[in-house]
Length: 295
Image (cartoon, rainbow, N blue to C red; front, side, top):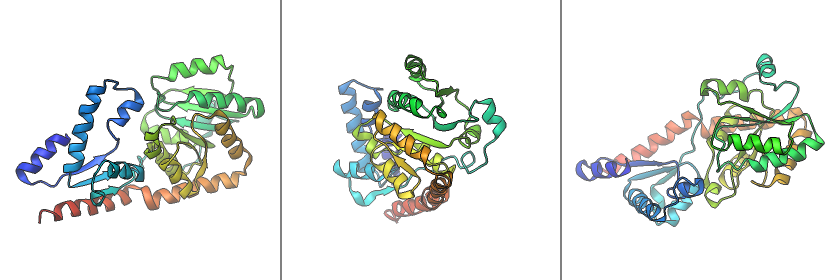
């Protein structure tokens, strides 16, 4: 797509705005999707051609911008525009207690993770923290909702660790996930420790903020900074079971009023900085800048 757009730009002088959701080939490397070093070099060169020839570039975090600048890309043509979430599914709502009972969430303090369970999420360390938590506060429950290549492996890990405080639920349609997130006491975002993820903001971060839910953020860098700026949760060191369990204990022992305040802070920050309305306003400015170069 990027190469095609460059061709059209050269032929018809069409302004070219390129949105960067992932830094290639770094993303392929860290997820293990591609390991062929020659193919990685080709992808790297193609991406640099696209980045350098685009009129404007939009990125989803400040770290992405810094990364591009370090690659020799002109910082004046890079705009940071955070991803919004699906606002029709993620908004503050009351928890449905019948649904809570059906899903075995009632009577528990639920730490909820939603989405893909793969290598990048490194959730085995979360299970090890659940082992620590189980011995101290048995009413805390870790809830994993979704699919992914590591889901069965994680289920087996939970059995091997004799965990009674983990619950694995199947993937649900996006239109229904908001009703389940509403039943969470705390939400969890976690990625493995890797330099790439310091500049990554998982989409679930925005979804949890929009849903007015406090967050334990186990991602270093931009994602943690976002949650801290919003006063919407606490941080923990990714892939560190003790740090994760300490964050859980901290959230469990503070008052419900303070948890609610964190959730409201996240929602307020989402509306003012991350929402679709903000996105459209910023994109208008980006397109204007791109078009003005040809007028």
